[in-house]
Image (cartoon, rainbow, N blue to C red; front, side, top):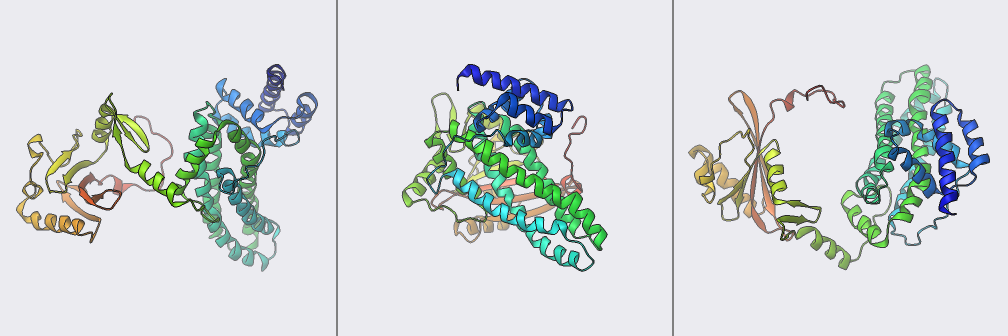
Length: 406
């Protein structure tokens, strides 16, 4: 297809989608797509929705109508991207998980038509563990959000992270509500209402997500990402994990390469510290550490204070004169034995963590000690993390929106 012909198709689709948002029915939109536009590849569909974002259509609006968008595209979708042959290709692994999701959704769909005083009880009993199992598809979504989306963003493809991530959250919330409300059902009428208003929306949205992934997102990603990027996604997937499928076995050489690349930071000429997970200027790193809502103090393997964070609201006073001082001399006499016991246990690998909490001037203070070890489990020192948890203990429920001034 020439750029000109695609440009014409794109403009037609955008006009139809615009009218869809203004009240055009999905059926009429589908007929116009078929008549005026014809077939579209998954990559073209993805590019069209991306252009809507680029031109100012809010992700929330696109999310609101994206199910309708995919519906009208179904009949015109023409996927030209071949299936990856490697059994360990990330797309193949995503699809394997989708087949498992489909099995669970298929079981849940059987309960949608269950009626009767006795039948609903059995359906409820069987649906509960299935919904709990389905909740683990969050791992599938997190791999997309944390690995696939960032690579696509590097190519200017922001749509998935702005729109599909919102759909993930919608499905997560539907699943949570379905699991909670199921517990309170006590008669057949409540069951019918539950299947209509809670179970069916979850099933429909989860099925729709599979369609969007396999017919739009994955083919577009296959077109945009190169072999090295897919290898990196496969490597990083080990950290997030998989669900319901066998974990791919990466050979020892690759595992060692992953381990080495993750453990060895470096400092560049421009004061940039390169970590396996990103790079920061020294100034950025310092201010990040000083902004954390905790007191940090690091004691090296020789029990000497080597670093402390300098945030403005420190709980415990620290001065620069403490650097190089024996940690035993930095605590009141009554605490020395406890400190020495912690350090000894860390050095002997008897423990990796110790947690205390105290009341200080009417505030509840959490004090945690963490053993810091290298990639070979050799002791490097101890990190002390102190945090005022008074206000955290008062939290209840949820807050998903930002209050004025907070």
